[in-house]
Length: 268
Ligand code: NAP
Image 1 (cartoon, rainbow, N blue to C red):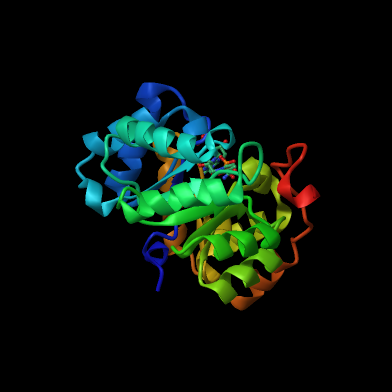
Image 2 (cartoon, rainbow, N blue to C red):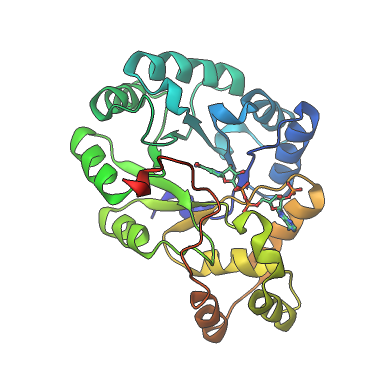
């Protein structure tokens, strides 16, 4: 069993950049029961996330904390130097998971991943993660690393169900961490999800997140800022979808991406 099985719902923090607000979102989530927090160098909020953890009543060792190395920092020496900066900002001796944010820009499989391996061997990162990796990038990374790949963080929601990468993850023993799990709010107006939500006296975000909880080998990290949204999402654990609901959500898959930059790994 993966540790992420215990932390199937986490808190995303992209664009939560106001220092007070970001620290408060993290603190609120931890007090409610969340134990999985996702940030990145590129979100420019590692210090506020760290403050939120420190100011909560939850001990650091009970939190599964993940950050990501920005693509500009993926040269070997830059990985090592900027990982230290991230630890400083987060106010911690280690992170639970460090991701390669994208296999682009300064990403150099041998150089980048040997630095991740070193950080792993030194105990500064408990697990190695990758993000936005396609099967060919995963194949290559698995050849280079001694450490197991723990997670591939990819966009996933009812409109982009990522069957191939989920099957790859199941076969090779890593977890899919779903980013933009609410399709960046696109799901809110979906009539099928609204109908299922009505049936369960629940909200659309709860139904969407309950769908992730019903799948295997997937964690989801919805970003929520206000206490209302953070709590609404957490209550997905109370929603029990039946087979008919799951079939109807499976039918929503239409390969729709919310995050699709020029030169994305899936374009080559
Ligand atoms: P998301 O989680 O699908 O959607 C976030 C949006 O949904 C925000 O506008 C949020 O509003 C709103 N929301 C959250 N809970 C809600 C609720 N219960 N009711 C109504 N609205 C609600 O999108 P995301 O931020 O793109 O993805 C989540 C996380 O994944 C990010 O924060 C980041 O940590 C990670 N991510 C990673 C990558 C990558 O390349 N690895 C890319 C994108 C995202 P409020 O903020 O106002 O609550």
